[in-house]
Amino acid sequence: MISLSDGLSFKSRLSSLRASVFHHTVILLLLAESQVVGPSEPIVALVGDDVILPCHLEPAVDVVSGSVEWGRPDLEPRFVHVWHLGQDLLVNQNPSYQGRTSVSAENLKHGDLSLRLSAVKHSDNGKYRCYFASQAKETTVELVVGSVSAPVISGINLNSSTVVLECESKGWYPEPEVLWLDGEGNLLSAGPTETVRGPDDLYTVSSRVTVEKRHSNSFTCRVRQNNINQTTETEIQISGRERNFWQGARKRQNLTKSYRGERRRRETWTR
Image 1: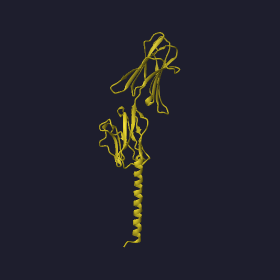
Image 2: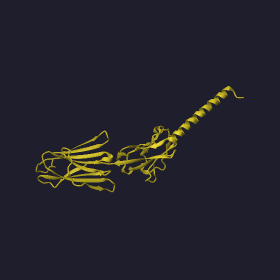
Image 3: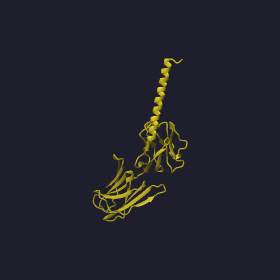
Image 4: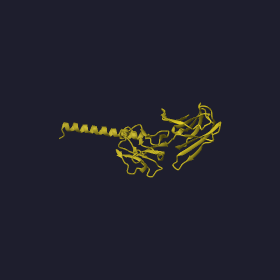
């Protein structure tokens, strides 16, 4: 004989079961509708930086119990980071990424599949696949890792009225451009930029310009790479004295960072 209390308990359990089924049905429907979304532009970082490769579900759904794979199709093994059923699965991770990757379990609860990559290297350049294996949906995130260095100015072919200035900067990626400016910020006409790409894929650039030796003349060599929003420059001040204008020169160096993330290095040589 079934008592009244047993009947109420059964109804309560049945109600809970229905609620659970409804909840999981809603999640499955949202997952079916969700799209994996990544950035429309490449992610830019400098060597040594920590970077986030964005990837998320729209609409957002809790996927902490799902499977997420970050990979690079051009590598073997291709796996950069794998999250499976609530934990990291790094058995087949590419060795070059060991100890440098992570995803956030807390973020996964909100549909955020983003990958954190630490201490980026030039070899990290490439296209990454953010793959939500639970629904076989994916997107691609491109990472561009740059490097910069300050230019060095030297003087050659000195005579009584003019001097040829040479500017060289090493260790750039991607390939930068070189500009010469006078003391008022006007572009100077210079010879063609010489570019050498080393075995490490880093670029060395150099350029020459002929200028007049006048009192308090100021000239700037600017090296910039717009794709990674980086500019470095060196300024030289020369006088019309007959003796070698490099004698007794001193260097002042500053490094500032703008709101856009641009790093600008300025070196000033004065007499």
